[in-house]
Length: 184
Image (cartoon, rainbow, N blue to C red; front, top):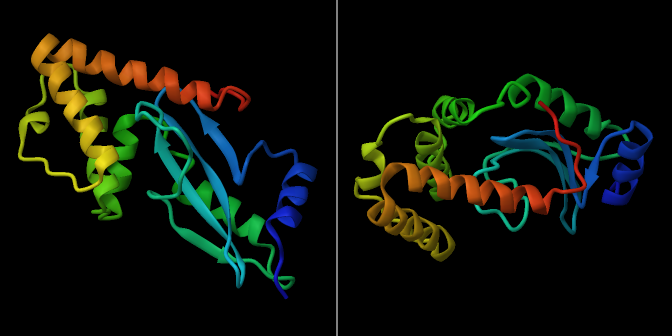
């Protein structure tokens, strides 16, 4: 028997978990937003983990760097499974370095994973990073536009300006999540 997203949301509220649309945000700090997400497909509802860099210019949360944990049914406490999976695999990711380690450990090679690894390396580095000038080709228009903005910022103002752009993107992403509690 299919369990709806709304039923899971009601259960999350009972447990005192912070909801943001279809996302339960369990960590929000200067570098990372992460938690579990509800995916309501026509045939079933699924629980996913997610982790995203705050320093990407996000206009919405997504599950691109996460993984599907459970299919929800009356026989399965999929919320508990999702929370356990989050605590086991995601909760320790609290910095750009942690995001890089997660991407590398899980051999994530999607275009978004490559983009996130690049901006995480820039965020993490105290000195100019050659990754910015490597032959990075992105097919996604949104990622390509952000990458072009990074390059033009670097050309105009150097490494400090490039890192400053990531700080600007962090501010925009935080404004998206203004109602979500801030954790340290």
